[in-house]
Length: 446
Image (cartoon, rainbow, N blue to C red; front, side, top):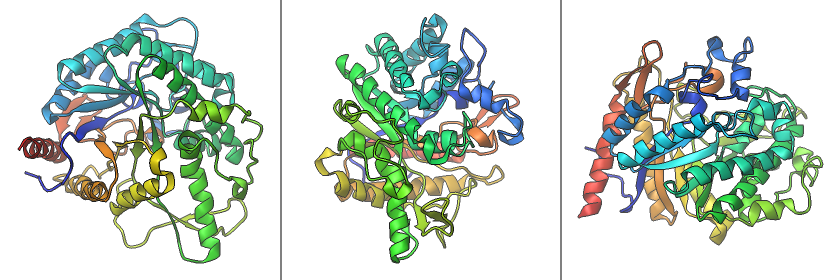
């Protein structure tokens, strides 16, 4: 039984998922299309032509999945709400059947003793809003605040804490700059108004939630950025990348200002998107907690051409996941230390809202995933002893799911899913995580 992780009493254990990756039922009960429905239908957009039309069929099988969570002994479950299931066009009349699904889900979680932690936006923008410009359109931020009000008014009596956005960096870069995710635009740095409008949406929604007495978090995909060498060119490239990936999405929220993006060729007003009052709207509501999604560090070198002010280069002599991501557990400890140094008292308590890895299907008995989780929790425990205020850990993911542009090819789940039969089979890592949680509780009770 694993019991070596020196984590504080009251530390919260959870798992995480996202709506489009698991729910399915994309055309049922009044749900409107999202950008991922449209993107996945494009030939060649997603590996093997897979879509999330059925995914894990969680819409119909949520009770079975909650039993799996109960079996783990979880404190919390982080999930996302499908905006277009609740508001089929992103605005206007509410879909009662969509709200009723999340009512059932929340009530079933509470009955199982599991605290719901919903995320309002995990990349599946209603297609009707994308047709009006999506996150490039400032108006989308105001529609998001209206949607937040709908959800808070329906579930706020049972759900105390809300995450506004998931990984706005990834959605901006992959969805609007590079086009490898929905909605598939290829605007490069001219995609950055989409980043600003997501942050504005966060600020507006945070005010809505706080007005109702609810706590607010924001989940960012953050990465420690390491220059490939001490050379001035590599250091400058790393600073430019850090500003883009990390500080663009934390400085406005925590410090009330944008970082210097001039190395990226981006003007102070981010191509006319930023109005004088905007940063205060983003910053003023404050955060009750910061969600940290950590997967790997990023190593950066001076550019070999002038298309970008940096080159992303591999980290040598480390293992890689089935997704090809470098496995560097100590990067989590170093990232937490860097956040404390950078933000000081402005940094709220942190919850690790995603951490996990994809493992080759043929790998048995799931040892690489167990090793990944164990080494990252070791690093997290060390960070806490060094002063990091981390309140909980949500592994990605409970079950194998639709991994965006990779379709069903990547296996992140503690539980295997046969997508032909929808049969769920717990892996060895499921038992390991269950025993870890039980051991921590037993030790904390002494």
